[in-house]
Image 1 (cartoon, one colour):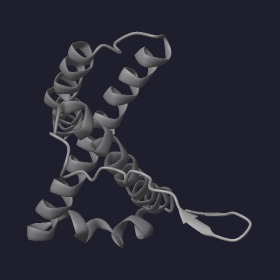
Image 2: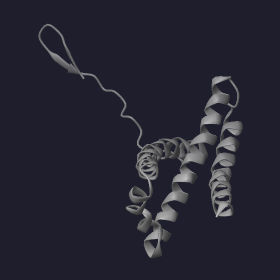
Image 3: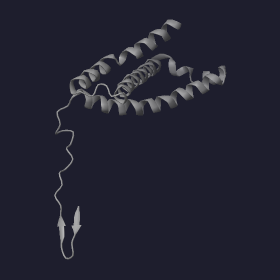
Length: 139
């Protein structure tokens, strides 16, 4: 930043913003980044789910256009993507609950925040497993 005086320009020294490589990684940093990534994945997943539901609502002929996606080797890949999207939704939901706790003024201490971050990262696959268990049980 330059400050102009009557006849000279003085450059003011300001500290640079620290880069991620400077900081020691901890759980709350990971949950922050994962929350942003899962939000982006959820946005894409919502679009894909909308296309799927439109094909279902269009009747049997419309569904037949997407049915091959769920068969064979491609079907396995599609199911993996669906599981990862379900995991993303579960993670985002659980981390959203943590943000609601923060809105209530709870869980701001470093130990509590780190503990809650680890709990969320470890528990986040559970909603996806539950969704897939229910879906596979319905078949």
